[in-house]
Length: 228
Image: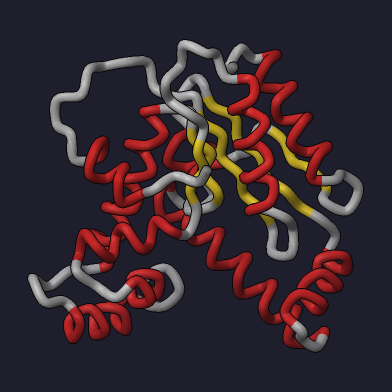
């Protein structure tokens, strides 16, 4: 079952005196446009829960773009406008926010900080899979973590996007470049452009590895490193 972020924010994120425990474990998944992400996260969650120790009350869960929805609730903004912060220049976004916010003026940095804080809080609680959202930058300092990127040749990704989105090759290429650039901006924002701290532990070629093979390989690496 996918995590209920509204419930999480109520019960965990807003807690101020939660008992300390070693952070993690956490898995971050990043992918180039056209490569599977959500399906890998879902299957990985299922398989990890099958292996979870019976005395562990904290089930594995995964989070992705729904972070935008929770940040929007926190800021009293339209979720679409929160997402715009990561895709456009701040001057444009600030105009959107200025016209939409009912409580107070909120700038780009505040929205990004809330999203980052939620991800880090959940990662510290452990048993979480972070899909995108600069997860590698936000959780690299957690010892019990593994960071995965799913890649593939551009022609393979073009074929996937053209079929899935019903696009021409030209439009698909433009979409891939734009989306890949936006995802890189997430990582750069949280830990600086070109920072080696965002280097992944392992990369999988989605053209030659099936989703099941990727998931089982991640689990094996987690076992070898005593993350699970």
